[in-house]
Image (cartoon, rainbow, N blue to C red):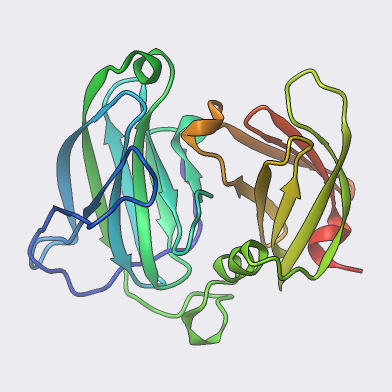
Length: 260
């Protein structure tokens, strides 16, 4: 499945370096910095992932280019694409969208390709090998709709939501488990204009979930392996977004995203 969002990469490619960063952002996640060989627009990486561990391939990227990623590693291995500043929310979710992603980069910054396992391979501690092909094409430029100064509105909204700097608060219908009737959850929304917003929802058990909206579309949630189910889907009926994030369900009125 082809997904077009907006990401990019530095036009200057340097010799390939794969080296762990000083510390992983989360336990069980190995981080690897990626740079392309001189004169090349892509590279192929051979790797492996074990059990519930993950590998984060981190790339510096510039707005306006297109990043393509193809993962080969069997039916239990997936990849997500995380934008700069992400706390887990993904712009592309492989367990939902497939083994190949095409992403037009909206802003300059550090992007992450996260490789992980699901199902029996994850729970049994299986080690799976994979091949990751990645490439950057096109010319770096200011992305359409990006705010001045190279800031990505979605990243900016997520940052403000994480700091509790909301444009509005209230309650929305929610259910934190499959088959559970809808109740009410507290939410706060940080808007960045044009239908781009981050909605922070507090579930009845105290957990928080971040729902991401870009240009009037629900595009993702900060699901992680700890949630077990990382699938995300969304539809819109009239003025109501209906969202499935893992085992959770949400109904978000359009007015939450656009105001009014």
